[in-house]
Length: 349
Image (cartoon, rainbow, N blue to C red; front, side, top):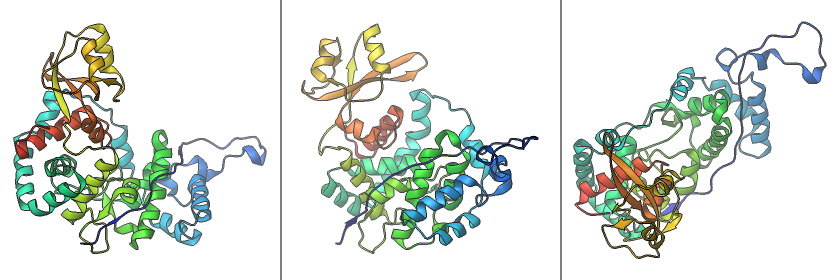
């Protein structure tokens, strides 16, 4: 079976489309605000926006596409103000007992078992080759898109320009992803208007951003396309390739329960940025009691899950916990992946 891996990843940019009135008194040309710059994208469209034009010149200079092609692309792209509204909604941090119910409940686990049974042969083959358990691959697809049933219907040719030039808080990131998307369409030989995904530009069953697609997507079924929308072999190998590249270790565990007295020192450690910053031996010296055997030299992150209002369980996340965390920077997300995976396989990751 032929397998090929994808090329590289990212580079970036920004924009704020804001309203202002023209000055009454003449000002030097170097300080003059053009009418196009003063109007929002919802009124001007992309082609009239100065920062879009600078982006076009830069992309053409880098050989991403010809300038005429890029002008045509932005002329056809549609600004989607509803995406900005979604991005501006205040985020809420949910406790584990709520997150678990919505993302790793019985329905999601049963769906994972069905998905695993249906595609068992290829999932197990990918697992053997990459060293990432099939149930982990299943769990990620389950959380991301409910096993492919909800992959998003936004055209990336609309969503990414909207976010790149209409959402200044993360404009640099989304301009980089737009750059990657244009390269991706060129490399795949596909019409950029044919790609669909989430409102934030994530694609396919595993919800890869364009930069992740270019770097880690795999043509596992050997048909010449890295089809993360409809080919389960490609999807499984792409997720496994991502996790392996981010440090997944064959046979390793993700989480281990611990007991502790929540001292100020340990609570401060729990609130720190997610990183494998302590060894198991160091945590033991701080009063953390491991409820399963783990060698002292292994690195870990200490965290807790709120299992009911005001009630917590404590864990350490090991190397494979951190590998999945890099897929989605949420401890709750990683815990849900493990919950589904263990429910699918009956294992103990």
